[in-house]
Image (cartoon, rainbow, N blue to C red; front, side, top):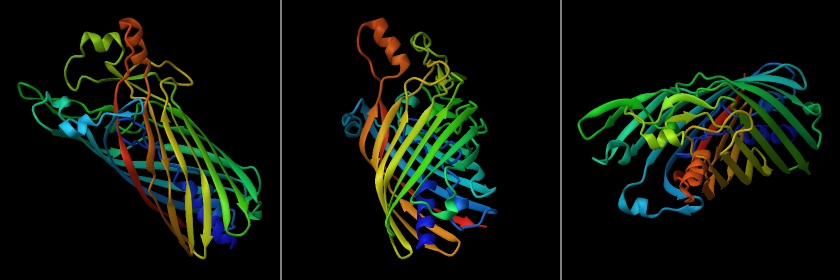
Amino acid sequence: MKNIFLMALLCVVYNTQVVAQGCVAIRGAGGSSCSITGHLMHADTSGYTLNINTRYFKSYKHYVGTDEQKQRVALGTEVINHTLSMDIGLTKTINKKWSAAIYIPVIANDRSSLYEHANRGRFTTSSFGIGDIRLAAYTWLKDPTKMPKFNAQVGFGVKLPTGDYRFTDRFTTATGTVVGPVDQSIQLGDGGTGFTLELNAYQRFGKRLSAYGNFYYLINPREQNGVSTARGGTPNATAVLYTTDVMSVPDQYLIRGGLNYQVRNWTFSGGLRFECIPAKDLIGGNEGFRRPGEILTVEPGITYMFSKLNLFLTVPTAIMRNRTQSYPDQIRSSLTGTNYKGDAAFADYSINLGFSLKL
């Protein structure tokens, strides 16, 4: 029963990926998860654990605040993003409490729209490659091999700007095509060196029932990355005035919590997941183009465990989507005297499928 609980917990915690759910560019920061796997798969104090998590979603429903803009789909003017990402994580267990990990995301995006192509038809831009790699170190509050009823793990990491944040593709214009940077939501990286803070905890209630909680915050001190939002053209005066002519490098964070229930080699989980791009960062300025927003999902999951391999599937499903007001929106509202808030497209759900393997 101990091993079953531990292996179930590791899969639930590994799935704390912070990734995009549409035009709100919540990227996978190199597998935003903890190194719980190395300690919990087996009660040893050394070795490696390989973690693979694949995620897919389609975003197409536009929101201004929490109000869905249903006319966009009805008129066929919605922006559609398809994202398939694979986060590859390798955790090294150093001793009973400490571990270190590297997370490498591989991302494929397609984005179709009318407005980015002079409304001359629906065309697609794409991006593919490695995202921002993250290095992290973790420590447990208590020795996890002794299976305390409650335990917590703290992690600190560095996100490197390895993903191409200047990825380009062709855009249709009134006179032909031009090459320019793709939309911020499908860029492979954000161009900033960031710092991550994580907190992962669990509480056991008897032999089968347990609770889990995860918190992740990415601090991006860089304000802007210098990439134009004009899609190969020249930014207009309005964009320059409101500072949306270049892309920002925003913070992002995730909060999760829920319950696990084990039945033999199966574990069933359910909880809530909250992801957010804030309008203002903890460190650094807030100018530049971003689509701040938040999404709350219910997150059912199932895990099957055998030997050194554990398979898991979760399907976070949206119950609240909110495109909040950005700092440039606030500037615009102040200068014009009219409250303004941009829109963003969100997904209905995402599919997360992966495994953990003790090497």
